[in-house]
Amino acid sequence: MTEQWFTGVVTKIVDETHNTKRFWIRIPDKEAFHFKPGQFVTLDLPIHEKKNKRWRSYSIASHPNGTNEIELVIVLLEGGPGSTYLFTEVHEGSELTMRGPLGVFTLPEQMDRDLFLICTGTGIAPFRSMAHHLHLHNIQHPDIYLISGSRYEKDLLYKEEMRQLQQRMTGFQYIPTLSREDDTGWSGRKGYVHNVYEELLSDRRPAHFFLCGWKAMIDEAKQKIMAMGYDRHDIHLELYG
Image (tube, rainbow, N blue to C red; front, side, top):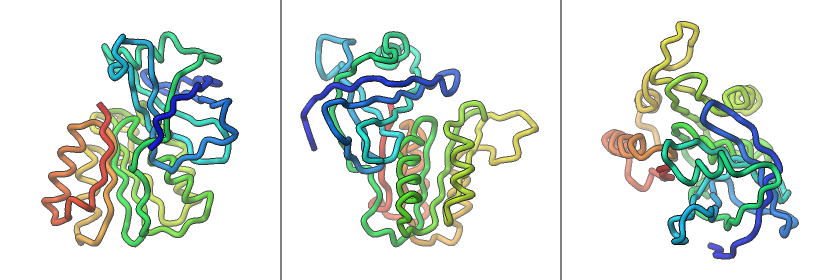
């Protein structure tokens, strides 16, 4: 784990949904930014005099591609000084102090069980990185289920991209699930992500679980997965908020 801080330059910002933005950041001092899919970076933002209250961590949403540029997808938190600063003060050309890559929320060395990638909101970021990495490098893998929960269809991140990847990538299923969608035009899953993996795993076959998103979802998922008979070592976590 590196502690070295460096400067990143924002090269592009895209409004993805009403409350999320995608940020592309280049690290000029590095010829290539090497990381494992699932890792994150920490930003040191000028929002507090105490350094540990200035730090905000975000999963890398892009896959390792040998360049010195990465993508982050960030949600605006009401009253959140970090995301408010990024949304209002940071523009293309802005410099950010950052460090990384950090974290061990990465693909298992032994790809011997089905993978259940369960997320809410921007928690899809590390899973997008993992899925593209596996596909682009033609890495052998078991069946992968990406279960992405949001309130409404308009909140789903990378929806069309993940649907296209499902068409190209054998053994990869993208299952968007909406908890509050009241539009009769939605033909996909409704309810919460927990119902989806519980149904898919009615046979209790061996599986790895990767959970990324809000604490309430992760806490409930941990309880439900262990109640199904799985061991806590089968569960890998990345908390947001």
